[in-house]
Image (cartoon, rainbow, N blue to C red; front, side, top):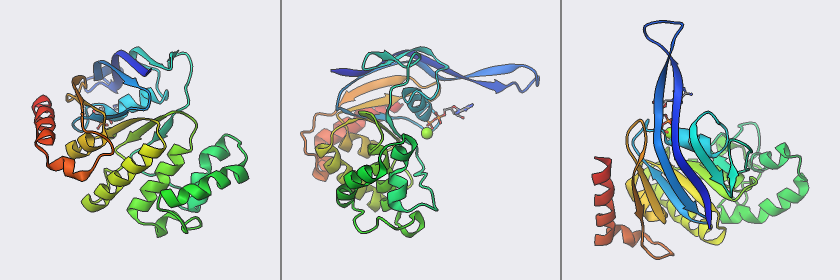
Length: 256
Ligand SMILES: Nc1ncnc2c1ncn2[C@@H]1O[C@H](COP(=O)(O)OP(=O)(O)O)[C@@H](O)[C@H]1O
Ligand SMILES: [Mg+2]
């Protein structure tokens, strides 16, 4: 089933003009972006820095309705009604004064949900997220990978069937990043949601995704939509295959 239908999106930001303080210039960030995403697919959005990936995610999260074109989620037009989604910014945004559990409970707290009940759901998940025994730690006492997993767990517990992840592993060192990719594949395999995963790392996009949408530089448009045919479960050896090199070649060619 098609869950997300984005049709011909143009997005501009108003910028103060260099010539006159009273006039505004329009900076076009997205140009004619159209794509569809099937329910429970893992789709990466890959593109150069500044091409509009974070902007596109904000639109999909329903946080900005100032664009041309339309986005439908489960048939609902996002300009008319918000649809709850799980949205994670590039920075982990954990609150330093809260413990890990208190941070993960935040979305439930904002919604006024029963926190005792929610904690009982979260507690067994801590093990899966590699956070067992760290429930009462504050973010500064956790490693970079753990903070990122805590942020992912918090995102996962938000209301909604769609996860929007904005370069979740961008700030991690290479080895931690690989561990996090393996872990995400495993967890996503068991708790499926539709994932839109923004990255500028080609290997990561191919390893994780069912599809890779390649964006041009600003104004961003989708220049290639590549289906990744590797079977699941995925493993790192796939990165050494000739099929992988062929995907990578395709992506590099479309990045120009
Ligand atoms: N609120 C804003 N106002 C004006 N320009 C913005 C705003 N947010 C982003 N931009 C500009 O839009 C372009 C795309 O930004 P962004 O979506 O963050 O790109 P990416 O995530 O692909 O790096 C950049 O040139 C950026 O400077
Ligand atoms: Mg960005």
